Image 1 (cartoon, rainbow, N blue to C red):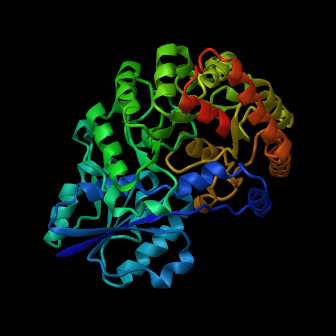
Image 2 (image 1 turned 135 degrees about the vertical axis):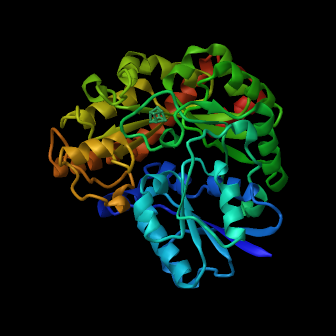
Length: 450
Ligand code: SF4
């Protein structure tokens, strides 16, 4: 039986020594990144789910390349996926296997954008949505005729989504597992490196399939914490209302990413609350209109939401759902007072959680193309710096050093014990009188945990 090793690059990468040090001492600062880095690769588990029984499959993660000499080698084929920051490490892993005569397939969002660079290290590159190409690739592999590139112009229908092979995981290694309920996003942010690079339209997975995946996870993990691996949940509200009603019966806790417009619909918020949602992450990007200008390329959507930010945060949190507001520093409209503006907004809007990162030019994004054309990339193809905590561009209205030191100062304030305590206390105080929060044993637990 042919053996396929599904290998995911994992672990946090950041080269900025000062920020790395701060991340170790300021709880919350790199939390979200740590969580992302410790999620299993849903893409690989999905391809494993599409693999017929005639193959033996296993799933592995490489957190640190220092383990390279000890990588497992008992495979006839390796399927490798990576985040952008580990792209070069993934290429080394591919070299390692190919040097041992094992063919390597690379795919995913980053690799789809860096297809020629990846091809120099692997046997085959999968470009775009892998589900459409994997059966053909496996058939080619079985007859010893892998092609250099696999690409399709077709769109994958999530109604055809296979069950990911969650059973390949050791749940003890994870603090949350992912389920994809939708793919794509109707917006077009200049810096976005999400699946909108793979799929031009928003599409949802049928409710029954999502619930079946959650039940599959519950078979390996009694009380799972689920992260929706969506770019932007709730865009199709009526679909999500059906899903949330079903989800409430599953008694799971979950997290997702959405845009501020989720706050417009009280029915939806009530269903989100009652189905176990713990937190919604929202890319607010900046509290300043000048900084938001041009961030969303289609029609300045994010700029047009700015007036609504505070109200939306207050509404969502009044349902007992915490908001993790994300801000990008170094946007073209940012001047040196942006750091104070972010701090003031976080306090004023009473955000429960906050995340700040540097503007990052991921491969394949319009931002990367623009900064390159403007000669503002400090180093081209420095993918290892796509960590969100390293600067690889010339900011427009300040120096790199000013961006770096302003960011450091902001981080120290935002994640200080006092600020964190105040954010928690504000949320708790608000909930005690919120009519939208209601009262139940489960919600009381939320209150106690806050
Ligand atoms: S809203 Fe989020 S997912 Fe949508 S385009 Fe912008 S960054 Fe990407």
